[in-house]
Image (cartoon, rainbow, N blue to C red; front, side, top):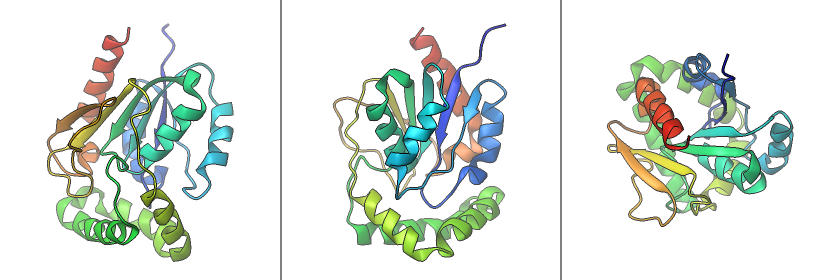
Length: 207
């Protein structure tokens, strides 16, 4: 029996693995999935502990600001990385802290209208992780707003949604392969088949 590939899944800012449970459960049918809860204020230290759980190489998948964590992991442990897939990744375009706050909160208020199927799960998660801890949320967002991704490796594929108002497709990058899909910032929550298709395609490319 062929051994399953391992996926290391990094969630977005203001959320936790709870919001992505349906996605990771679906991935678990085909892959071994590790989905840690990230402390965005101290992720450098946390990544060392995550690395200890990994034998062999992993496929990293991240959503939104989790892509900052994905790139940091790849820099620290390049020999542990088989492939990186960034979903609607924040970080390729730098914004001011104030601009990020405004964009995030406008974005979150639109979730209820655009994604009734996932809005309760995301709203609850955001309330627990951020609203109840505003000082932590502000500090972690300020830290993330200062990070600019540089496309660390040609093993990276970044998938952007054509109607994503929060992190639109960057104009250029010399390393990372960019692709577009239909949808907005949360396209992957409602189109998991597309994620599976991309994973299988990337697997064939890298055989």
